[in-house]
Image (cartoon, rainbow, N blue to C red; front, side, top):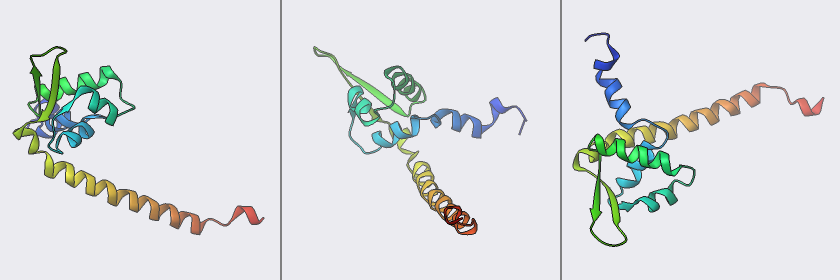
Length: 123
């Protein structure tokens, strides 16, 4: 394998799904129900409209998400996961499991750290 990061499959994969919001957007769409833009926005209250639009466009370009525009007034647009996007399910499940284990590990580490430190309030 060349040492050019542009050719590295890992970098390509990470660029496709990594970002503060992309995995969460994918997670919600993997629930099976198509979602409208404002539904996603309500599920992600801290995301800006611009960032949600940008991530949805990038996921659509990667063929992970599909956008369907219904010809009606007002226009109705729904986003859903593609069959190709569904292939991310085991990856996201593994990340979820690792994240849960990592949180527990950090809690145990903090508890051990507190046990080793003398109680400074009693001095």
